[in-house]
Image (tube, rainbow, N blue to C red):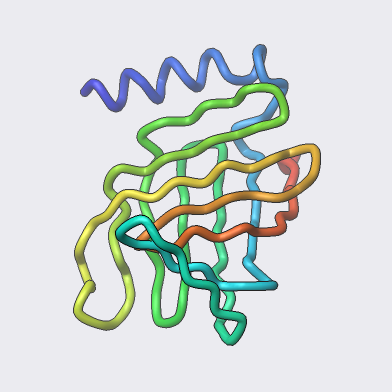
Length: 137
């Protein structure tokens, strides 16, 4: 119930403050590099399959890589100036492999002015380039 109240408040507050529509979405990809981080160190791999991230301002989000996606609803949405940060505390893996059905946290911060993002999920810390999909209608 607390999560529902938080999202309902965000739905009422975000448009006047941030000037954004909840039907708007962002699609981001890490075209240049893959970065994996753990235990205070990060490793860069240029030989990779790009991850795709889609964020709907309605709260839906997906982080897709390799053989599936982590999908779910945002638990926090924060719009400050040109930055939009969306965090999901329980994103469920909907692909193949040992992680199938498990839930993890993930976060993306989109710089709406420069159309870039930083995404963190499952040990990945990716810089990404993004495209805005305006609200239809």
